[in-house]
Length: 151
Image 1 (cartoon, rainbow, N blue to C red):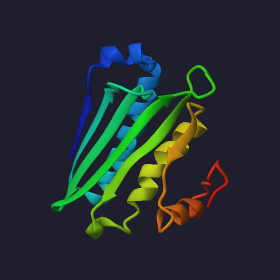
Image 2 (cartoon, one colour):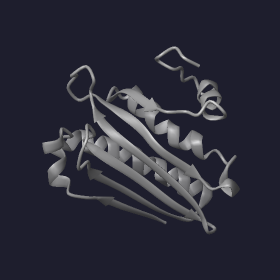
Image 3 (tube, rainbow, N blue to C red):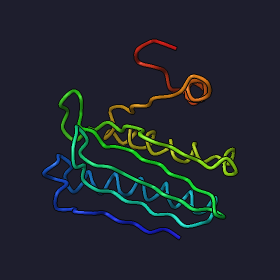
């Protein structure tokens, strides 16, 4: 089951995210949540709301409960760093998968959002902080490379 909440929709354009771009992000995150639901079942809440502070224009939160186990995914939609119109960055802020749900392809489903938005031309980049003990190598296997050249 999926619950979609788009909160304070009238405030998105003030923050720099117009209705067509909000719809593109909403469509992509809804599609991702539907795929998570199809793959795992459970209950999913997708919330998109304007950011209250900082550089972000919007915050996206996906909370899942599958057989009593939690999944939490949080992203921030940031404006273009190069002042390109209709272009944004996606900050991968938080990603928690209960140990019992790991290894089921959740990360691939979630990361497909960034790939799809980049292919659509709306996303100029994704900001990720990856721990090198696991995360750094996992990102390399998916084709991501650190922009600072450090590994």
